[in-house]
Length: 270
Image 1: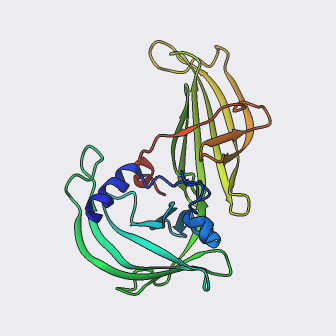
Image 2: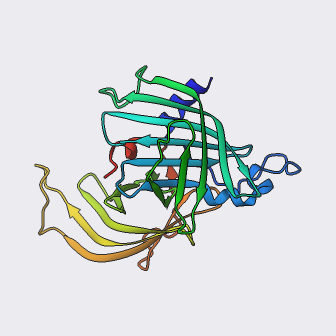
Image 3: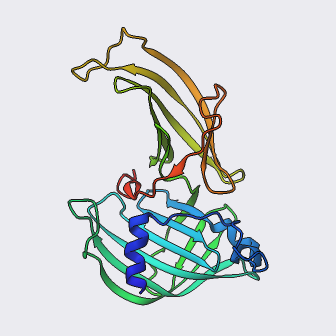
């Protein structure tokens, strides 16, 4: 069952649910309501060398984690954990870690390539005084010498009508690209570099806007309503975990972006 879960979570890129989501039965408390401190772990964490990416999702009834080593490569190693939160220590613990090696197929899927090495891995996770995640692997010490920077839950692809937003991690920052087509021949692009703020759980970004008109041969017609200017924006999530784009020019006003649940970002880590 857990092996099927691993493949499914990879395909869906471990959709990170909002830790504050209410249970359908309002008399039942969610895991985050019973253990408020656990929400500090929710989201993505990455090593300084971008060699290891950790995804943590606080669910209604517990905590799930995936760890990817050498994301962006055709072959990579991954760990999957189901964890419990200790209120007295503020730490996460698991006794059922699964480690596997995986090979990306030509179509971008994993197929039947995952080879599992063990299913009894023990590990503890904590957040140090610098706000970084510490992985204490009690099975094989795989997390030795590394701490992980919080980067929120933004990695992925989002869409609203004809506008698409992608978040990628590139050399210590978010690369945020927005494409919004006016027609088949006219496209608006915003290219941002963004910084994640753990305190506000937002990404503040600056970049360049361009309005591009294309000729029939696919090249850009720089003389046809070409427009270019510097821009800024703040990206956040609403209570339903929809992406919100806020800017001084108001381009994203009233728009709600849905997560497309792709795993493309796993193979574009820099």
